Length: 271
Ligand SMILES: [Mg+2]
Image (cartoon, rainbow, N blue to C red; front, side, top):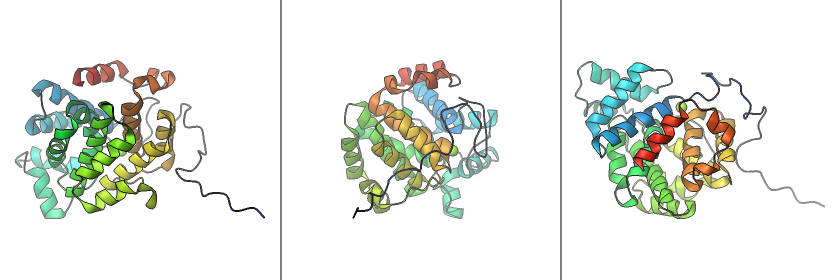
């Protein structure tokens, strides 16, 4: 008598080959085209480079400038915060009032845009405070702020030579919200939900990075989860990129990414 096979963990197998050119999803774009995750990441990176540190006012203006250029794909929280600012709300008050009035601000916008540049620029000892401030300019909900801090701590540690397991342990140790800490301490105990929620996004991206032995597996796994694929793939890829370095990225993927030279030179300038 045979025992039952172990239950497979992680994303289901692809129904089509996501490595081939093609348009999938609800907002199909061109092959290699990036979306709001990368646009906002570049905006934050340029602000960091210009100011020499994270400056909330400059970062807000950089994000609004990018939003005005191309508002497609932006989530509900960022869009409403920018609208409030453009109609007269004080820039550093808009996210807080949105949270206090409507409870909004737990979506994943601040997680996705801040991870690479803030994790690159700030060492583990100071990345948390900067991450909280960076989230609060649009996403004031404490869970979104904490998810940003956890993610940026992991990236900061990875880029400074620590293993993914050790980086996660340090993020757990500095995490101050029990709901977030529980999810990252035992990610296998929770189903992967590829939603726009900041904690679901952190959990799915970190789980894929922990389960995958390569950059490709983490990113394609994120795509195959469905849901907010561009964001979860961007974050899973950021983790594996920080863990392995750019050499681990497939040449064919790099060649087909729009504006890749500008992205690489921006990352090098931040480092
Ligand atoms: Mg997205």
